[in-house]
Amino acid sequence: MIESQISLWRQPARRWVAHVDMDAFFASVEQQDDPHLRGRPVVVGNSPLTVERLRVLALEAQNLPRTPEYIRGVRGVVASASYEARVYGVRSAMPLAKALVLCPDAVVLAGRFDRYREVAEHLRRVWSEFSPLVEPASLDEAYLDMTGCELAGGPILEIGRCLKARILEETGLTASVGIGSSKLMAKIASDLEKPDGLVVVAHGDEARTLAPLPVRALPGIGPRAAEALLKLGVSTVGQLAIVEHKDLAQSFGEEHASGLIRRAHGIDDTPVQVAGDPKSISRETTLAEDESDMDILQAMIRTLSDQVAWSLRREGFCARCVYLKLRLLPRSRAWRLDNPGFGKLITRQHTLPALTDSGQEICEAVKKLLAAAADSTGLGKGSELVRLIGVGTTSLVAANHLRPMAVGSTDTLIDGSDGPLREGGHQLALTASEQEKDRRLTAGLDHIRERFGYEAIIPGISAKRQPTKAD
Image 1: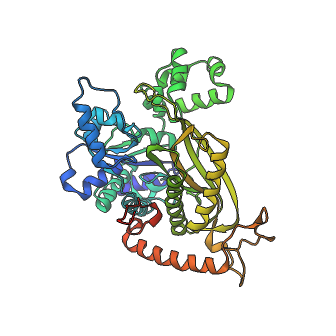
Image 2 (image 1 turned 60 degrees about the vertical axis):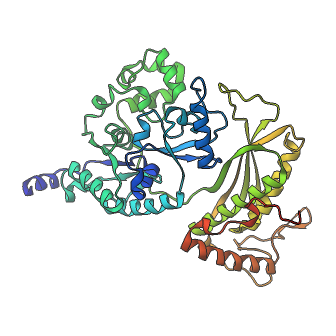
């Protein structure tokens, strides 16, 4: 062992990149927290329908004379599927309407994203033990620059085993780890032996490892690109590596063709980059029923604005811009199983007069965007309905970079800009007394949510109003 370590020290440090991908992360967390779910097909769904309603629709579909391709009335997508569910063909990002046809006995759960973020924090601490350069790709996956680790930790395969063992020890979950000379090779290697896999692609073995794989295995090659390659007689990465550049350039262009050939040989110089500040923070929801009632849509905006503001404050940012996102469908459309339709997506954006992390200010601005969108589309005339609604913030600034509010100012948080905070002659920011009241209320709500989670208190306007005896 000592002699092998000495030999490593005498060699120049080779570049190694690890890609860590947690196995069926959301579903695995649910199975870890509830032993009764272990061994069962678990689907974590992102749907506006309740879990109970999804079960009813799935049972109704089982009693139909023939099995449908989709279950009518089911909305939402699969956020995560356990490997027991994947045996039936269920995959992440698949419509729930399709997943429940493939696996009608699946245990469908609503996502507990606060819990997943908590586990992800543990993962980040583990990853940072193995490298100072960590590039998160999502909550449950990341690239680690492991260059030079062999000099202190031994052979790279052993380091990979230690990484997997620490993840299991810290979270009780398994991960698939790929290690290679680049981010490209690490990503592909982590997919080769899922779940709970560990694959190291040695330097010089990149092209040989890639050759038998389908072209879709290369990140960035989707269905359309794969179809175009198939017309050129290319179905594997090995065939892509030897195709004539001029033939490829006719379909993809000179620059893209060169990039495809380089990746087919396993060449990738992209560095592992430590994540910077987020560019935006947003929340959106798909409606259980298509909607045009402005009161209901405004209530949803209030809830989404509160969630966005909560995330801004937790991450220490304030926003200068807000935007509204709507997916609209014609009221007269025919719902067909072979063409359910996703409608048209529109966005409307507004620059605020002052930086803010207030849910009330975000809500008021987005309500005005909704009114403007209704006037300029069929929503206001009743000819179009909303299928999806979202609220987002951009132009984020770290709150600790701002100077305190001046006495008597109408600014919520001052960023050094000058000029009156007015638009069209109307004051848009809250008054100083309104701001103080809003801040005190928000601080109290944040304190409760930090202890018991966001769902401990939700905006009252978002709750469905129940009729009283006086109604």
